[in-house]
Structure formats: C-alpha cells, structure tokens
Image 1 (cartoon, rainbow, N blue to C red):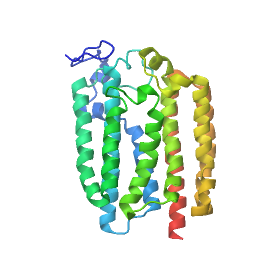
Image 2: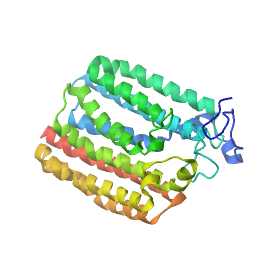
Image 3: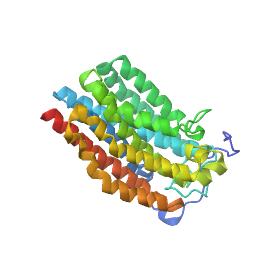
Length: 316
C-alpha cells in the first residue's frame, strides 16, 4: 500500500457510504467526480475566444469543437486529481464541509479515480495532437503546460494549491490560456485586444476558487494546505473576492478602444454580481457551497454578454 504524506494508507475503500449514496449508479458517481457544475469554467473562455475569432470554415468549426472537448478533458482531469490527491494527502476528511468528494466519501475507489485522471489526461493529449497540427509549437507548449499543471495543481511533490498558487494557476489556465489559445487556433495570431478580453474571464474563474478556499480555510489550515486564503485570512479573502468582481465588472471600459460601446454589455451583470457578493460576505462554512454555483453562474452570464458584445463588434 502507498503511504500518504499524512500517514493515510491508500486502500481500495475509504468510508462507509450511507444508504441513499449506495443507490447511486456508477455513471452518477463519475458525474459527481468530474463536478459538472464547474465545467462552465471551461466553456466560457472558449466561447469568448470564438467570439474574438469566429470560425469561417467547416474545418474551423471542427477545431472549435475539439478545443472545447480538450478544455473539458483538462478540467475533468484537474477535478479528479484534486479529489484523489486531497484525499491521499489527508486534506479531505470527515470534517469536510464542501460538496461531496467521491474518494473521501467512499463513492469511488481511490485507484479508480486516479485511473480516471490518467484517462482524462490521455484524452486531452490525443485531442491535443489535432490542435498541435493546427496551431504548431505554441499549442504544443500550452498543451504540455496545461497537462503538467493539471497534475501539479493538487499532486506531485509541491502541489500548487497547497502553496498559495492555485489562484495564479486558475487565472492563467481558465482565463488567459484558453481564450488566447482558442483565438490562435482560429486565426494563427494574437493581439493586445485578445489578451485584454481574457483578463476578466480569468478574474471570475479565480473568484469561484476564492469562494471554495474561503469555505475551507479552517479544514485546509488544519490539514496543512496553505492556500492563499489560509495565508491571508478570512477578512482579506472576502476583500479579494470583492476586488475580483469589481475589477471584472469595470474591465470592459478598458476594452472600448478595441471593441466599441457594445463591449460594455457585461455591465448588465452588475445586479447579479452585487447580490452574489452580498451573500458571500454574509455566509461562511457549508452555506458558501451555494455561492460556488452562484459565482459560476455569474461568470457564465458575464462571459455570454462579453462574447455577445465582441461578436456584435466583429459583425458590425
């Protein structure tokens, strides 16, 4: 048996599953494992990228579909790795207040989840072969970095998430990289406008992570997982969340020189952002779970409005 950093032995089962969970099908358990509600963080940046560089041919549409599939595979890999390695490292325990983790709760065997992670990495790599043929060396570099970080986020000898770098990882690989990568694959070039348009998408992706880490400050600190939230404390983490939302909402003003007034459409998400922020400021612990979904919905609404504003400019 493999010994975990905190003395946990890797066995084939963890905890006893209660009766309702025993009734879950294998498909339902795997769906829970990949956390489908979080997959919107993969969709939004690709959609914005496609608004910036709309497909022009049938081949472009195929590449767009493969780009989206690869993004799904990478995020599923991140989620599975996070589930497995947080359990293995003794971070996910019976004290966890977040959404169900399939290994810690005994819904899936640890080695099965690890194999699922490997399968997602292989799927992403195979899809990446097509994308590399289209986009060349830049896509090869981005693809290798994405897969490496999917593992390094929660696993490996120096997990990024446990050393306060999760926010940087999410901003880069769920904001800048997918938006810019999508544009590169469609037109083979990048410009300052593309990079600028990717920024608020990355900021809102980080906001989702901040809610997660805010909720888990107590348990992460106890387990030795030094997320940024653990390092800066609850009050500053809440301030960070507000700053991320405020910056994202104001950011379109900076985009108007490239895209005109239509790019201000994301400002329509301000009421939703305000209500979500208010709830995050007032909640703690398990009650923040709802705010994960609410923040993800905010990113979807914001991203859709940004894509619409950019597309309007492109078609005008």
